Length: 130
Image 1 (cartoon, one colour):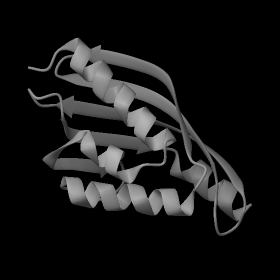
Image 2 (spheres, rainbow, N blue to C red; image 1 turned 180 degrees about the vertical axis):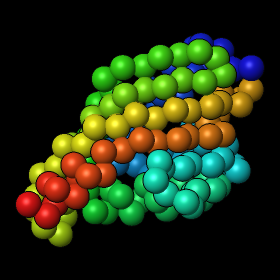
Image 3 (tube, rainbow, N blue to C red; image 1 turned 90 degrees about the horizontal axis):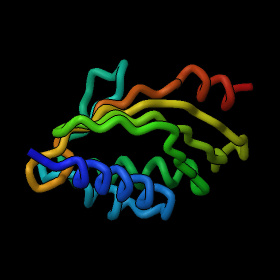
């Protein structure tokens, strides 16, 4: 079972990777066959390569993306974090602020095997369409 320290380190590395706008570093915290799922989506993103592509796509749409951790709860082998993302949409130039939470499970090597995201997509859509 991963330690508390591994969970915190993986969470810290995730925030650092997103804020460095580095899709390779985002993917590096995930196990090879990890699964990432967003609430409300029937499809999971499976595998480190697919997760890297998803991160690259998001960073292309929001090139100044910034992720701020609001709260982190650690209970090995899982953690939950609440976050706020801010960015400017590349196509429209509109600024956005989105709140969310992620529930994460790590393997014994300290790599993410499952991420489940709750994202305020209604607020995102309202900001992009308004």
